[in-house]
Length: 155
Image (cartoon, rainbow, N blue to C red; front, side, top):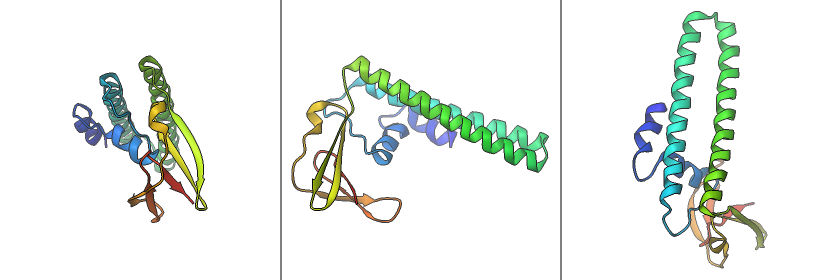
């Protein structure tokens, strides 16, 4: 996975940007912010480093420790690195937004028995309109419905 993250880090669409859009339905502002793009490139490099560290550590543990201890240590190490990476990424993201004068705006609205949530990175992107576009499927197999303001259905 470290190679996958590293391959996309320098390009126009870093993997962390795509994950933010798909996993947490984060929409970027309509105007391009070079510094925000740099954050996503840096965060992609951070995760490439985390996965490289994890891979190296697990390889060393596998060779040097008995199976029972390896399983316990690998679980703890994986959880610790993922939590530390997620925390660092979140704090770094909020810091980058603050420096750019952007905010994460969320708003909930009831429409036809569904709860819709808008996620945007600037206040002007948080407007909601009627009319919805079918999107991809969520991990549970249900269709993901999106509206023009990045609305994601939560039944």
